[in-house]
Length: 400
Figure: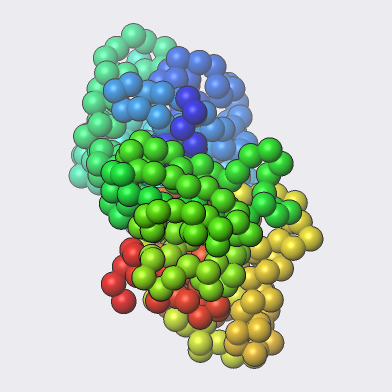
């Protein structure tokens, strides 16, 4: 149960109000996670549950508000439902025995546009069957069709788990690696971890934890230090490290210390490959050279936190890019799963390292950016570009 949410298979449950989504989530989890009621609109915001679902492994179940919600508040709930869709690796579309509405059919099209695999579930079969035409629509437009009743015993759980195994994205079967394809068994990797105002007291951040754990699992030799001790660390090592990984904020200082014949990159760039499309994010950083006065830049932070005095996304990166471009630029920030409905006004998107979200959400955001011709990069790549070491920082992972 210690797998981080961003590394879990995200399973989103969607459908109209009172279709039985919450009852289905409770049935699959074996727990009363969501409130169940005959009153429409009981689920007002996404309910999330991290759990182990054997034989699939660590998953995150997301129960959402109805796609047919009404009124101003209902529209806000629907927006949250679409946010959940953006990060769903597998979407479970729940319908009942009533005729499919145009809203339901349009939402299925949205799921397909999201590149998410779809399990359609006809619920409430104890009350009757869906008409043949709509059942055929579900068969033709989704990847798997199942039937069940939340109040009757059936074989649904077994069939549902079987469908999850069949439809899970490849990265959950053949897990992507952070750096073990670069640093092999018995090779040395130095992790440079600054301890500054953004470092959580008494611990280190998730990308650093995950990278260190993978090195240990791979039987590589891990050496951890801060940037002030790096030069001494390099001197006392009898064998040079294969790779030095640094927090992006210390790129400039560390690049001056690490000899050119030793590979150098950052945690954020490693996670750009793990969680997104590294080549696309790399090409996006090149657009920094084309920025003009008064261009708007969107900064996306996956986690929600109180900005510190020298916050990387709200202070350090804007300052660094303004200094690099010599332009008067406008920076706007969105955090968590919020994403602006219209991004055409932005000249560049800079995403965080995405340690708190999953690969599906990042890939969807990249696709939306590409469709709107808005270049997108991430924190580490943007910092490497602005400090003049992008080619060196990207070289261990991607040929220019």
